[in-house]
Length: 361
Image 1 (spheres, rainbow, N blue to C red):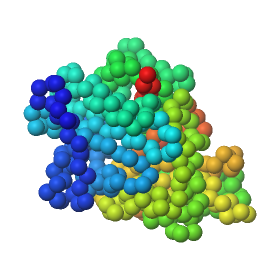
Image 2: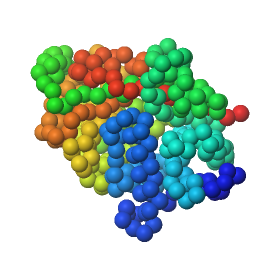
Image 3: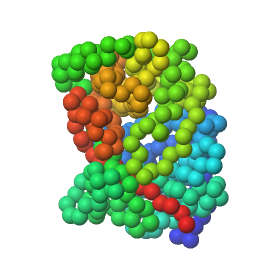
Image 4: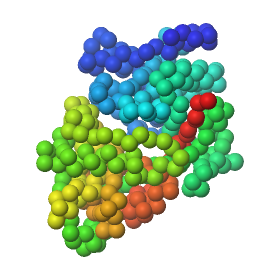
């Protein structure tokens, strides 16, 4: 789609079947731009991913609709735009991603991209746009969300853009890191306390793909991520997870050679899976690892199960990815129970993200 700005194109992104095909050039360019943008904002490469490893996350499936565009100026890739549409009945939510190289900021490209995604969102019956962005710290005024937890610099470029385009800051996410090269003595002690407090539970672990005996319980826990985690005034549709959705979830990692390890707590009396923690590392196991979802079902809280699954997974991870330097994770700043666990283990804050929302009239 060509817009009025000279030389600007939002080209619908083709999702190739393989990353080496002739039709994969735009996808590879999109990933290259993504990696440059994330390195520029964060100052490190912990968010780096290869095109081959990201491709499975874009493959069409029956559980979500992902629309993407490569942003070009005079045929040069300068950014990417995304619009994720949940497929749940009567959903009014759309998740927006607009990312541009620094040297094209201030030319109206981001606003033009927003006009595009708003149009497509309306055409799909969506009226709530939500987006996340990292906001490097800086001096001056601060913006605080209605939760009262955390803040970001008001003069950050992305923050100013969101405010100018009608978004409101709803939540702050803390990005934390755990040094895998340091001592695990504290982790071991915390694990011993957690084991003592969770006598009615056992730990089970697996690598993706999920073993059949754990699929149902894992699917139920994954479905609770959008209902049980702190969400401030952000809006999420309750999701249905089944064996098919778990298989697609697992394949996003395994089909690209990435490693996903899950540690879960199982209630001994009933056999119910009631807490879990996920750790992921890429094909290159010298890269940073990523802690994905962590959850304790509400009915089983108060037994240190969050501490149990996190510590067990970190200890196991030393054998899985011994050369990975650190684990990266994200938590809502108001999620004090989970932050307490992370801080006790040794996670330290390294960055903050803003969660933004715009309601279309």
